[in-house]
Image (tube, rainbow, N blue to C red; front, side, top):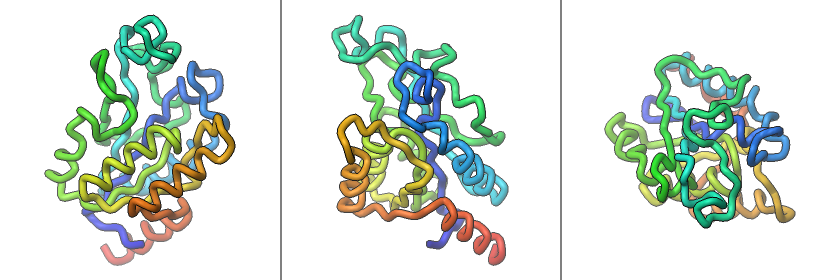
Length: 201
């Protein structure tokens, strides 16, 4: 794996409501925060692009029970639940991409109705490293949309967690991403690639 100026890190939805105690918690979701912080800090220190996506839903979003949806409200705009995790260290100057900002907008992918793809292309980005929450929903949809848009995608597997409401949901999601052309790496391998990039840059 080689990193360059055409590489960006995408951190998906590491928000309070997706952590234990939140409205829609991913089991053991908080475990990824130290690895995500190391990746984000490493990319930022080397001048590489870092993107944080977040669900940022209006109180009347169509996915909520009160609007005929199947979910209790979560990640509602300007509430504590929509904030990034307390221990998440967000460097200055990173991109914040908000999803589902209107009542009927899709919240599954960081590429739907957000302009992220266009912004990445304008910045000369071709390769994406993806981590965050949750593996079988937001990460999978973000990765598949990125691949369909022509980006190379590497899933940082140990810096992801899934709901796994059915046994092996996350594993099946990873298999689907790999079938569509994603690659997989560990956060340690990414750190080694950052060191190599530093030595050559």
